Amino acid sequence: MKWSEFSIHTSNEAVDAISNILHEAGASGVVIEDSLELEKVREQEFGEIYALDPVDFPTKGVIIKAYLPLNSFLGETVEEIKLAINNLASFDIDLGENKVSTCEVDEQDWSTSWKEYYHPVKISNRFTIVPTWEDYQPVESDELIIELDPGMAFGTGTHPTTVMSLQALEKHVNDAVNVIDVGTGSGVLAIGAALLGAKHVHALDLDEVAVRSAIENVELNHVSNQIDVVQGDLLDTVKEPAEVVVANILAEIILTFVEDAYTIVKPGGIYITSGIIEGRKEDVKQALIEAGFEIDEVMMMEDWVTIVSRKPV
Ligand SMILES: C[S@@+](CC[C@H](N)C(=O)[O-])C[C@H]1O[C@@H](n2cnc3c(N)ncnc32)[C@H](O)[C@@H]1O
Image 1 (cartoon, protein in one colour):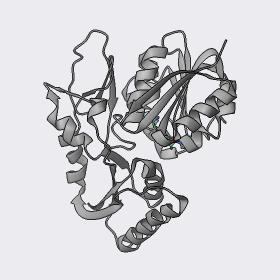
Image 2 (image 1 turned 90 degrees about the vertical axis):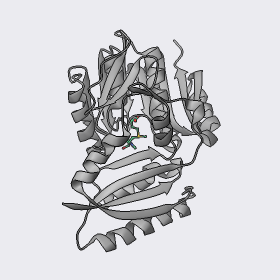
Image 3 (image 1 turned 180 degrees about the vertical axis):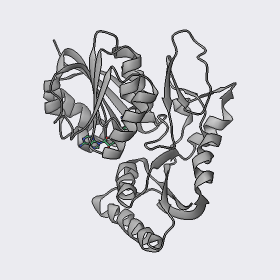
Image 4 (image 1 turned 60 degrees about the horizontal axis):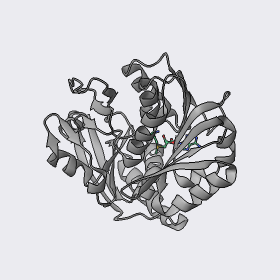
């Protein structure tokens, strides 16, 4: 079968909105590539492992790739997608380079082309993200392996906002805590929390494609007994408070539920907010403090920020 490959060079800020447009246009999966990341990752080979050095990644925007079946509606669909993307500018969303290109590919080409790019990536002291087709053996005795299939949807798990969230989870999750993962996407953070020993993880996402992808990844990583994945809007499905709550969503969305988040974090517990573009850091910090949280740590990678806050006892 023939497919049309869309490559959209845009800004970090526009990723969620453009991914939604592509999903709505019928794309079966959307993959986000930091434009310099793949190049750097390939250059910095250390044996089988590729190291990500946060300070080494200048911001050049991202490339979003999506695949649509080649059929008689394609011309119309391409025009609709371009129009919808250009309309985002009227919501003050920076579109960066805003270059859209398409080309024709065979299914076999794109389903195997991922394999040239993605290799095991060590993203923190303990976590290594391994594509499903790689036969990887842990190097360290306490190393934790998260298996993901970047071809399915929602990226490789190596986006700065995901990496910082996993690094924060590594510090705060142990076998005494329950975790809530708001906007689970591929399920990568929920899986990470389960591998760190969390008693239970409640993972949720608004997007049903994300929910399906997360369920598949949870099964792939053999952590179904610790995680439930549901479709839900923000905290609607949350029944019990937890010691650790993580939300890797955009600042605009985080700001809408800071007070509700405060009620579902147990006293003494941790709230990890990620997906915050640098320009919104102070707004989110301020909102967290006003809701009653104390700021524990502010992490930065490229122009992304993760804020770890604590609910006082
Ligand atoms: C930036 S992705 C993060 C995915 C994953 N947690 C990670 O760290 O890689 C944000 C996710 O939030 C989800 N999302 C957006 N709005 C939401 C809402 N109102 N309720 C639940 N999930 C939402 C999106 O569908 C997307 O999967």
